Length: 176
Image 1 (tube, rainbow, N blue to C red):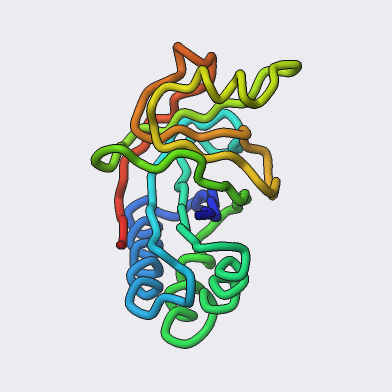
Image 2 (cartoon, rainbow, N blue to C red):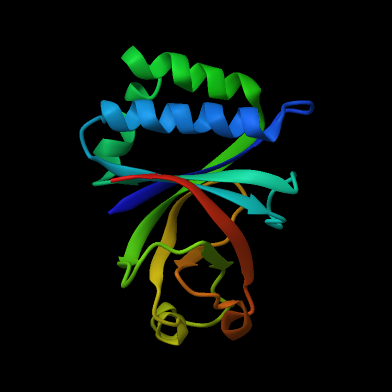
């Protein structure tokens, strides 16, 4: 499974509640008529993510079967009944960037409000690094589309163990 993760933030002067409402409206429209290969979506509010230029931002996760599904999502997001809600949210955005991540370890429990972003230390082989990760839903970056760390663990605050940054996140929407 892949995830397209998109970080974005409101334009100056846009009320956070209005931005959130427009974003959730888009995710609901997407869930009501999902493109092939879209398994669901998640939206988190995040604060102080060090790779973002805004202190308060949103993190959208689009859970996909494969790269073909990513193309279908790209087309479907701005088509049909989804176009209006997409454009309404996009008009309020001040900027954004993203990445494509591959699921390494599936979730082992209920949804979590914590994400821990980290990168493999230079010189450490991948098998050795992966062996140090605590049990958690684990994602690894596949395509770089913006400045974000290589790994994300969901369901544990692993910052102390890994030297990464735990980003407190409040889930505001999830669809199957």
